[in-house]
Image 1 (cartoon, helix red, strand yellow):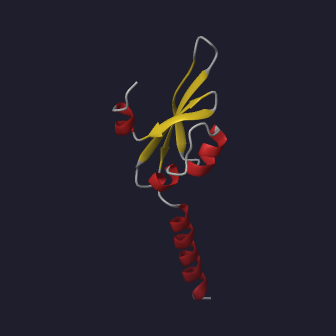
Image 2 (cartoon, rainbow, N blue to C red):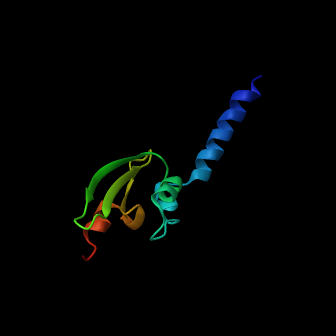
Image 3 (cartoon, rainbow, N blue to C red):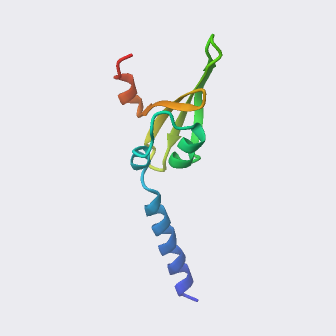
Length: 96
């Protein structure tokens, strides 16, 4: 019976390690991928921080993903397709 808590703890550590950090998971992103696939890669710990509809009807949405270490990745979508991502400081320095 004493082995069960140790086995569960080891399994938890193993599963957490396999998930990787938010930064490492963001390396799997590709421009143009659907929003659902982006969420599957980065995880469900996100908030919608901005959204709007353009005059031509295109929908723009920004999601902020966070992990337990409070690191974050912003993901920008146009019509549910990933068009840009990165941390806030990197995105602020990108040319228009």
